[in-house]
Length: 541
Ligand code: XMP
Image (tube, rainbow, N blue to C red; front, side, top):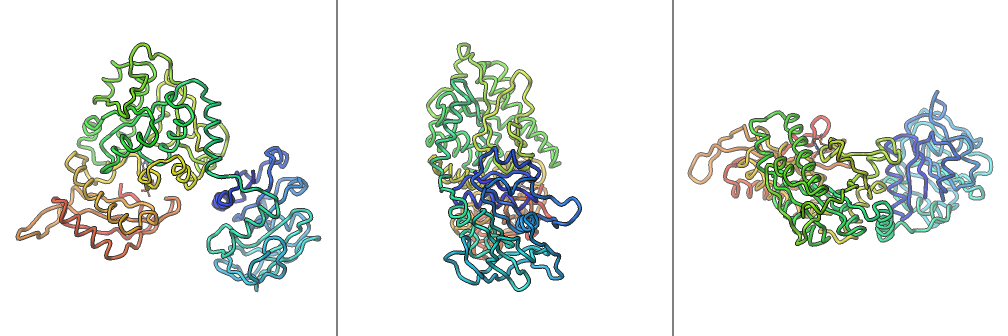
């Protein structure tokens, strides 16, 4: 394990991801964690992250007492570099001139971190304070015009510091610097690979679940699919997946779950066709938050009924609650559907919780991080499950790699994020079956052309929004039309917190526009949303 000590939220996660890209397992810990507790995690190395504070500000986060006496190789980055310098007797000063953005370092001594690299390197900087004098025993390895100690190290004691951000892509040799620290400076081995992750997790799931049964709700998204596939590998038929078809998914998505996913994993799938039920509940509703509430509530009710049915073979109640029909799939009949004799209760609920959720909710182990909407936190008391969260240690890109490793279809593994309420919040106005069909057709064309242009992995999300209550005049063929506009909303983003509108090539936009107006009869106008977030959100509702 490499511990990434977090001095300021947004820096640590990226460092942890980069370490894992070097195939070394990393974990984020708060800077308030006592050194003894860190040592108990048996770290091979420690990385001190950047942070927004200034080391001599009142209350600025400092390294835990005794951190530098642990005899664990340590790399300080940016603020972490300054913390290290100050703690070991160097000097940190405040400069008139800040360095934000691109800069060039001159390597004055390659030492361990810069060995084999060019003497001049483009790096990414973000600081005003700087280390003016390295602590005793350190060699200064790099400088810039304004920063005399941009790199320093004392390999004897295993201390390394860099003022720039090696984790950022704009730092030319950043990954090489990290790799050299991990492999040469700390003696780490590249053992964090997808094969190992899968094997370890499968073992852990078996140990946790034993011969008990588990259920998992599938949303069609990446996380729940990978979690389910992993648990299926571990416990086979003891797992039943539930897929609630609420009718708000995009074209082809229910089939991806019901056919492709089942074919790839052999999982027991219990499908609940609840389309009517959701449409009835949404009739006449136009307020976005109201829609979300209704969809969330109905989802929990349907999931609960299905869970009850699977767990206790309780058909009667399930049928009432569903207001729809359930259809089995995948050729195997889930045990719970066999009625009375399937009374062995389901003890575990599988959730696709990811590492960022864990970090953001305080990182406590065992805390139930239940995701919004797919959330079954509202299940009644007699349906209390213990959670299985096999993705708790993983970042999104690792989940995708694991999905590929497990042989899941690319359409599922590379699916863009999609909101839980689905197309329900992409129809501005009341949700009806006709409107859903129109939007589904337009959306399918947009996605198809984006994929054809090879841009689907660059674009973070591509909502297509139907302005169902707006009519626009058009001319098609010889006649005047009075149809509806759709909005294309392609965005780029890192984490959905902020986003920018994607600059799609004109010819791709033109293709999408022509095809939608030609092929979807009710639509006679296609517009592009060019608002960043903030101020606009990604979704329109
Ligand atoms: P906004 O529109 O707020 O969306 O910029 C940020 C991200 O969240 C997704 N989103 C949702 N996901 N339930 C979800 O599960 C919701 O109600 C919901 N609303 C928005 C959105 O697609 C984007 O990825």
